[in-house]
Image (cartoon, rainbow, N blue to C red; front, side, top):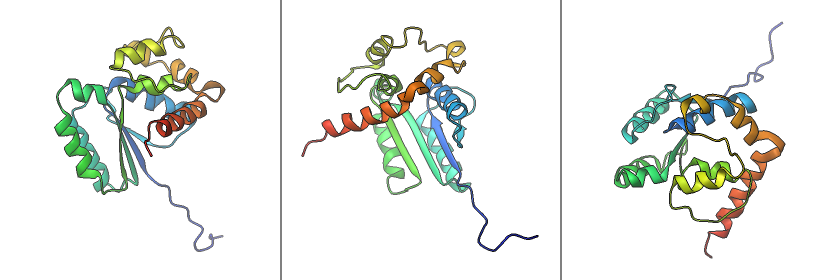
Amino acid sequence: MSRKNGDRRFRLKYAVLGDGMTEQFYLKHLKDVKGYNYATRPSLFNNIEISQARDIIDELLRGGTDGIVYLTDYDTIVNQHRKAEFDELKNRYQDIPQVLICETMPSIEFWFLLHYQYTTQSFQNATEALNALKKYMPSFEKRKVWLAKSQWVNELCADNKMDTAVENAMESTMSNCSL
């Protein structure tokens, strides 16, 4: 028996890019832990340059990807004196709704911290954010052998911590907006 016309559902294609090893392992484990359906790029778990991110985004757009998110640590951009190059990347995609560029300030560890506490504290660098996170995740390490294990992402997702992080991020964003 054939199916009725109009019943076919199309699957949207999403891709998420992480420019560092921590981001890439987080995205890989998050996909498994939460059952999300997206491709992670690059798949080599290496840091990528802004020019590489641009090339990957362009390739994904040409391939018909419906949504692309690029995660990067802003403190790395500033420390490597690549702000102009990063601004150029943001400007390149600002009018392309399929592309969302997310810079974490100072680093993704701030996002992890929001799973445990609400804060508007301004961290000067990734080390400060990491030290604050270690109050809640004392064993957290940025070494490949540790990040490769999914337990830390399981911990971040347990007990509705992901929902807490989203709420804390929204509240933090709203408190930083000036009217």
